[in-house]
Image (cartoon, rainbow, N blue to C red; front, side):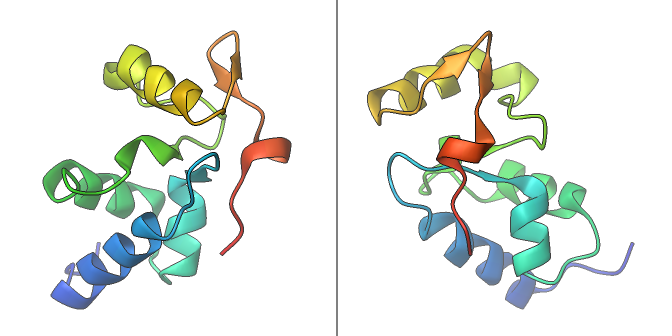
Amino acid sequence: MAPITDAHVERVRELVASIPAGRVATYGDIASAAQLSSPRIVGWIMRTDSSDLPWHRVITASGRPAAHLVTRQLELLRAEGVLADDGRVNLAHARHEF
């Protein structure tokens, strides 16, 4: 994996901050928009530098929240009108386009 630069971190932060309430994006969506080689890079950035961002609007490609955050993430999304069926968000309805 190529080194992660401050510019990469800032771009991911900008993209996450731009996701409006009631919408979601996948790690892959953000990686693609930021021209990063892997959604895992977005996950790493989110783990290390996202406490002041709407982190709950970033989900996996399957439409499921991060495994360790399921309850809290679904609560926050539900409060914004994003509903999940059996723990999965319908990306066709809730996905934010960059």
